[in-house]
Image (cartoon, rainbow, N blue to C red; front, side, top):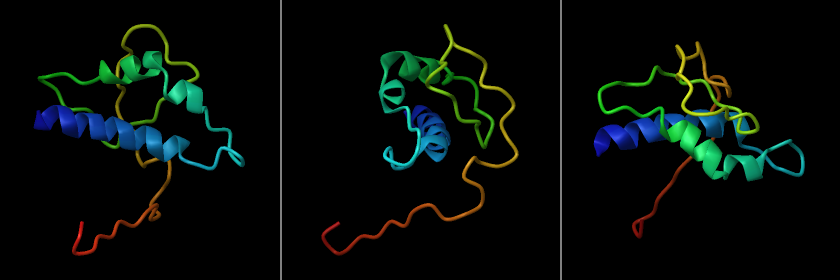
Length: 94
């Protein structure tokens, strides 16, 4: 379970880093990001006996391809660069 969770998170963060934005100001392909075809193209990267390269390159949901493409060699830096992108806080109620 933990391996699958970590790999799914690695994929989600790679894609989030590329496509996060205000759709009224950025060309965010929301429909394609939420499509089953794109989800399948990313889910099939997770293997029981392998770890994805990190940081993982984001995928383009407008062109997910057919079947499961290789994950590639990773990228030198994430799409968003070295900047802080969010801050999480919690109070005593969670």
